[in-house]
Each structure stands twice: as structure tokens, then as C-alpha cells.
Length: 79
Image 1 (tube, helix red, strand yellow):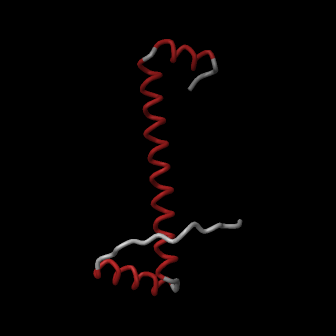
Image 2 (cartoon, rainbow, N blue to C red):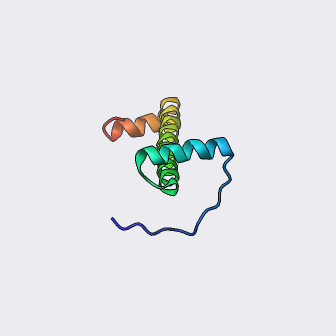
């Protein structure tokens, strides 16, 4: 899988956080920039999954409260 990098992103870290991240990167044997990319990617995936779950719950609530929507689901073979 080819990954195309976007332009650099500048972030500010306080000294304590930077030290903690540097120690974690060293423990994993990777550069600090890679650790931060990995953490951001994990966080973005988690946020996307959470958003999908919230959206699915809203749809389920709507269907449960709307007879015509519930009928449509029933006609299609269930939820």
C-alpha cells in the first residue's frame, strides 16, 4: 500500500508531553514523528468509528419512532 504524505504539520508540545512522547518513541524504537503519526491515525480511526456508531444510533432511534420508516425496514426484511 502506497502512502502519499501531505505537507508538514506544525504542532506545539509542552516540555512534559514532548519528553513523554520521546521516551515512548525510544521505547518502541521509532522516531518521534512516526509515533505521533501512529497516535493520530489511531485517534482518527477511533473518532470515525464513534461517529458511525452515533449516526447508526440516530437512524435506529428515528426508525423506532417513525412508523413509516419501521414499515420500510419490515418490508425490506428487517433491521
